[in-house]
Length: 200
Image 1 (cartoon, helix red, strand yellow):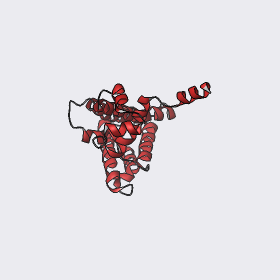
Image 2: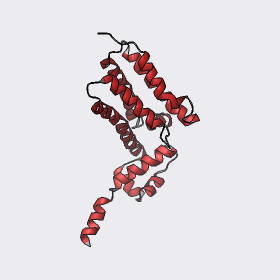
Image 3: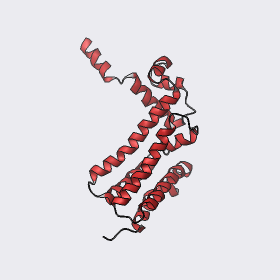
Image 4: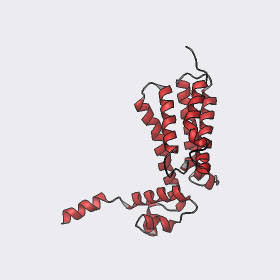
């Protein structure tokens, strides 16, 4: 009996993980400002005292939530690199495909990091460096692959794809997947195909 109880306790996520999972779901679905600490604690089947023991403030919980979302997005680069080693153009095309698939998912509410940037304009908020680092890194990763793939103006192509994606994320939320945002993959690959590359 004691062994079964211990096994059940080991299988149950720790309070910190439950709090982060609840914050992840609630913040993404309803927005950061709209969700209270009480709601997160309740959804995590814990209490405010426990929440504040793990996160000293809601702002720090928001920051950790965004770190997790950024890490999820950044893992896509590793995935495409493993799938297409030494083939930067294929990696770029695969990344476009994966992002397009995410845009088409039911319940997609756009980019959690971009949504947070709108909700958190304060430059001294602890989440701002996470937001700015992630967006800068995403754009730099595009430029890096473009350089490796031999495009003659890798920075410009990176900007074009990056801005196309940012717009597509907003458009899909505004008018749905039947709008222009739903054609992100087609348009992004068209940009890639038409961009000049070095011949040698």
